[in-house]
Length: 112
Image (cartoon, rainbow, N blue to C red; front, side):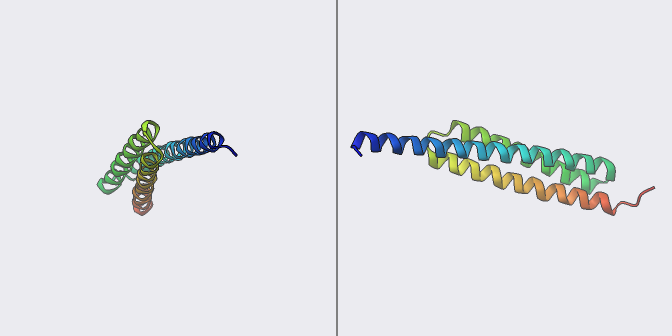
C-alpha cells in the first residue's frame, strides 16, 4: 500500500469514527428527551413536589444531552467528538435516574 493510500484510509477511518460519535451523541440526546417526557408524565400523575423536581432534573439533563450532541456534531476532531458523546451519554443517564425517581414518586402516591 502506498503512503497516499494509507493516508486516505486513515483519514476515512477517522471520519467514520467522528460520524459514529455524532450518531452516538444524537441517540443519547433523543433517549434523554424521551426519558424527560416520561418523567414529566409521571410527575403530572403524582402531583407532588418531589416528582416535579425529578421531572425538572430529567428535563435539564435532556437539555445537556442535546447541547453535547450539538457539540459532537461541530467537533473539530475525533477526541472532541468522543468527549461530547460521553457527555451526552452521561446526561442521558442522569435523565434516566431522574425519571426513575419521578416514577417512584408517582408509584408511592396513593391512587384515588
